[in-house]
Image (cartoon, rainbow, N blue to C red; front, side, top):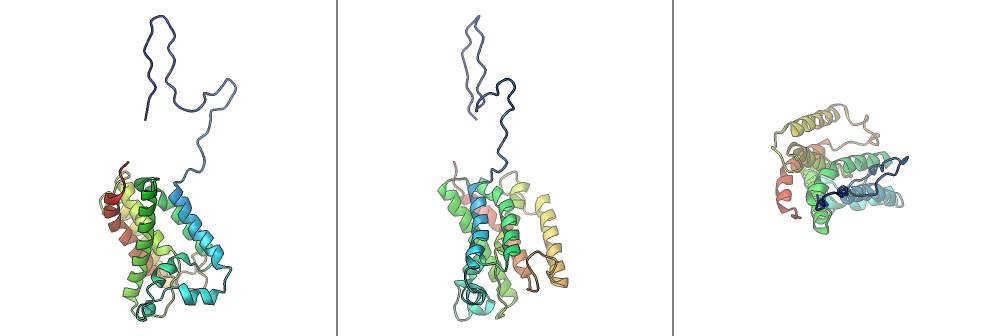
Length: 238
């Protein structure tokens, strides 16, 4: 933080250092901090999720899922692109809005770590897409050859959760893997997803009668916890 300094002149009143902004006049209220000041990457990924689903609704559901949803069985004929495209699809407005809200919350620590420059943005979205791909591949490893379709950014968002937990534990840099924030958030996320595995995800907004790929959630969280270290090392230094 820069400071304004003035040399003292005996006998003259000394001006006070300027702290930024205009000083409130008598009878005026002091200026308030902005209510919404999320980093641009956090806003962009939220728009990507919610806006992407808005575009998706313009096309027939069956055609979109057939072309772009991911299934472990797609890996055999070499339809590897669906590992990526499925991240940008969602099963309904509630599904997209929930993922968008979680992405907005858990993107902020990473965005601040990587910085607001173009390099930081590229690193952020590389992390987001890579972890989403690994979460889908983790699901495929547990269900080899399955025709079950998977859509949604939940694996990538779970990775943002895991990475943010480590950043919170380290005060803005990757903290210990077994820090209190990682263990508490990871334990809660594990419990929720084991509950989904046992009774289904009907209690989740937007799931309806569709299955929930809870395995991708857990793989994504673990991937985020581990991958934040090398990505932090790659992050540009201001």
